[in-house]
Length: 375
Image (cartoon, rainbow, N blue to C red; front, side, top):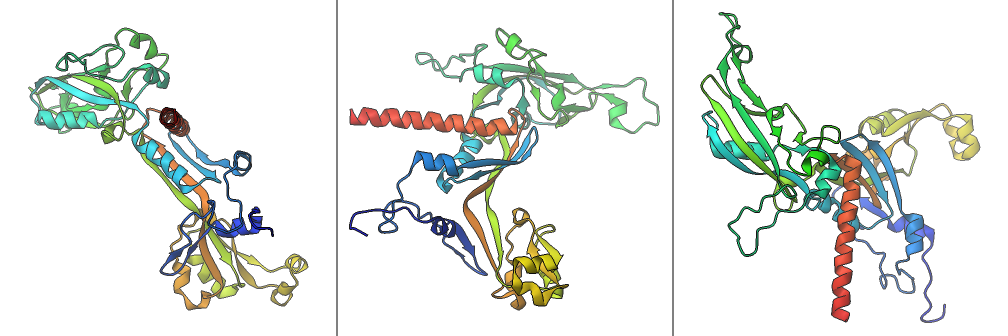
């Protein structure tokens, strides 16, 4: 090869370099190596068309507030950026300020405000997007600067009283008293201005995502009367603004049986993995037609990999001497299995699109700053 000429790595080399080795006590080949200069003579320059062909998204679960999907063909830095954005940078609305008019329950004002602040809210997603960020007035920092575009108002008003119709021998406080337990469903939304349209009953009013969250317990003579202001924020400022309960990923497990495992050993091998990962199959004549080496094993039970996706990579099989040299474990470096569980303000699959929107805004800001530096 002439000096200075670069060549593309073969597909076999690319596939081999994607594997992160999982050994009994170590993990190998963890660093990305697909960058210019790592392999002399190879062209590792990033190419948009190649990326379009190699990048794939595959959904495994797509429920309203719980999704699992794979991002295939991207670098760990990008996958991790999406995860961090999901946790800390997708804006949502949460309870920010609680004005206590009256609270004679046994729950202290500060504790009550903290409990209210952690209640996830839901409503019309488009309405949330139209709302503005709250900003203090520059010349008047002490002014609240509250308006219908940056603040949502909820009220909680409840008084515990005796139930005159309860039986004399009744012991259940939920029957003995009215408003013995105060739940998140007792929060009442008071829309003003454009909010009446954005968060109408038809579009989706502001309410607690889980109406059965217990806020306080009261007895006759006790009362709670508070006004609540909700504002836009991000999880990086406070966890209550995070739109996800969980946002995580793992690399696709890889199990390679390098030498056949038969009969009793095959059953023991299957027990080393979660159910459904390893299957036991009988060697048949059809197997011999595909591979002549199976001819001496017709009728035997052998272990095969059925679904490596379910594996947790516990390395249990590597502890047993009978499996030494017969199996290799690993993970696929560029196959990220995401799990996203929404707290209710956005649907789980929409949340990932929101993280992409935030990422695009960051890239645009960086590009603008670079242009300003270059001139």
